[in-house]
Image 1 (tube, rainbow, N blue to C red):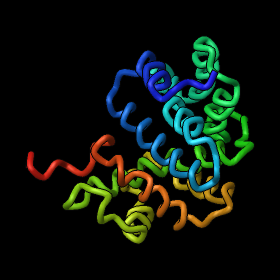
Image 2: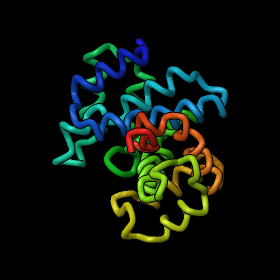
Image 3: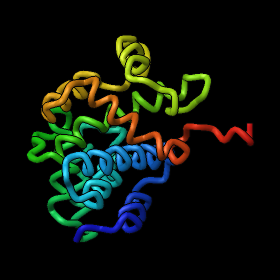
Length: 195
């Protein structure tokens, strides 16, 4: 079965409670839906993969080598389709699994997972705390600073862009565009009236 968005969120929350992890799932979902539209893919399927990609994170974060390896069990237990299982495993390719991304959906997930974190962090340090005025050149400037968002593996992002056959600039631009409409859902774009 391919879960609906609500079913995928319920399944994610069954295994994850930290709101920062949930916001990351929203960000990856948003970017995946954007790339599904761009690539002619099934937007619901790509979005669900984005939501569920880190389903096992809170159970494996103390042993990162297990990440993406417990996920198949959790997903199959819930009756989730093998296409989702394979995609979730493939985002850990060369990091914690040897499941290589095999299609456009899996390549996009591999490329954007880490990048969403870098883009969000770049937005958070702006005076606006927003993506509305974030440009590719600003992200690229932060990219060069290895102390900035130091947990983000830039080599994985480069490898993902190459897998997708696009430039790093095009990848960054598309992730910014994908996240702008959902910035409040992912902790950005503070409400001006509340400030």
